[in-house]
Image 1 (tube, one colour):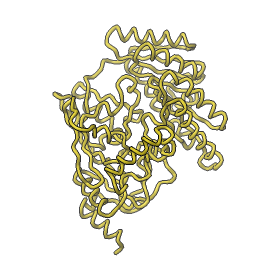
Image 2 (cartoon, rainbow, N blue to C red; image 1 turned 90 degrees about the horizontal axis):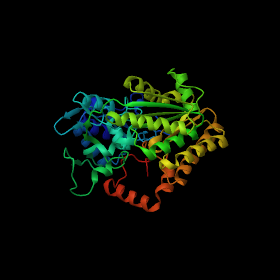
Image 3 (tube, rainbow, N blue to C red; image 1 turned 90 degrees about the vertical axis):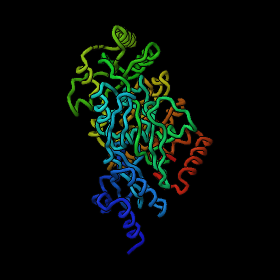
Length: 457
């Protein structure tokens, strides 16, 4: 019996053989996330955890044997954050899906494998709402949202995941279980460790539970859809709107993404538009009408060729669905490198102009969709994986887009995370002092470097 075989036998005894996968075929679905990182490895095993106790036992085993661990949620990540590592243990949390709504405290007690949409539905049954709203909300897990501090379409007004986290349960690299925070809204006892783990991408601990803040359900939103001749014109309108009011949603699609969606699933979008802006207001009463009218006026001032507004919530959701369909639609055109760069809103026009210049200079296709209201853009580089020259040019474009965002005092990732695909650009954004502090925190919590090796740092 080899050492690995004996070690895996010990792990199976600790966590239960039925939940441990060790065959290559059975482990294959757990090797990649949506980033489809070609450098993924083969894990030594995959634990499909059902309980916190199993995760604790697995981390104790990993610490004793020196085995690296890759935590994994629903696999919908876009930066290679849950790519498998050769010889590592992958802990998949997709079976831990419990949701409990506490109406009096307006909180939800959620396990990491619960999907974002299921938390929303559970809250809605009690007249409550969970705001974080990634485009992939139907398939992404709360654990993954916590790991990357996900945002989404509504974050321009309602913030990102960390703004709704009141408590966390985290298993450390040595198997200790931390219980942080709780149902109380205000709690400043001790260091803010909870915020440290949100967005840490599985490098500091395995999140096994969360207490999330809910808010009262909102009234139906009014929706504006405006067509522009150019992306620059749409971006200028976004800046003007943002200076005057706070929309609850402001999403941008360029011509390439519009046509990709229409090819994928015809939704009646204007194929000739240079850019499409989808915006909403959910303010109460007359304020909603006034905000939509102000948005329409700003769009007209900045060259919109057509402006459509509606108070019909179902009709408005159709346009939101078109925006959410952009990633799978563009994926039909080839292999993707997914960017997630952001800048301060007034610099959005310069960022979009720069992305277009990079695409032209490198001779690559870069459709763009954006959470334009908060300056977070998703340039999506499409390439032919079978063409080595195409892959090289597209990787160059990928790096140049990140460098462009940094040059505008922006960020290489607004919500997808650094993962493995962007870690080389992180020092250029945050600087060596921040990198040194980050490494020190990592070393303090994970001295053996077991958790998600190769990600972020």
